Amino acid sequence: MARRKLVAAARCARRRTKTLPSAFFLTDPARTPDPLVVARRLPKGWGIIYRHFGAVNRMTIALALAHVCRRRGLVLLIAADPDLATRVRADGVHWPLVRLGSIRTRRPGWIETASAHLRADLVRAS
Image (tube, rainbow, N blue to C red; front, side, top):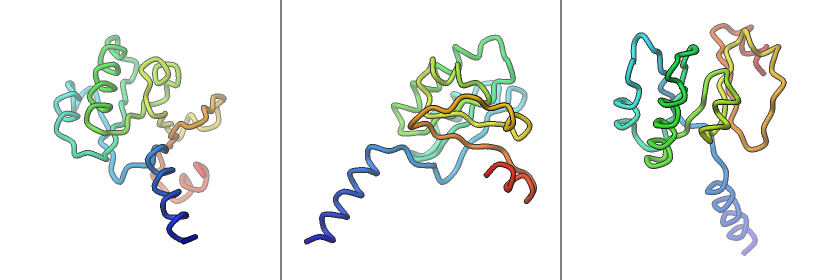
C-alpha cells in the first residue's frame, strides 16, 4: 500500500514539474532562419533552445515558438535572456559558458542549462 502511494505521488509530481528533455534542438539564425518549421516537426518531449543572438525580431519569433511548444508538449529555453524568457513564458534559460559568472537571476521552477564543451566546463557549470 505504501509503495503504491509513493508511486502515485511521484507520478503526480512528474506531471506538475517540467523535466529536462532527452534531446534539444538549438536554433541558429544563420543555419535555421525559420525555427518554427523545425519546432512544428519535433517529437513531443523534446526541447528547443532559442539562440536569437540579439535579432531584431526575437520577440515575435520567441512568442511564436512558445505557442508551438505549449501546443506540442515541447520545452522552450531562451538563450541568455531571462527577460525575454519571462515575457514569452518560456520554461527557462540556457546560459552560454562565458555568462555563467554574471548570472544574477534565478527563477523558481525554471529549467536552467549551461553550455559545456570540455570536462572543465562541466565542472564550472555545475
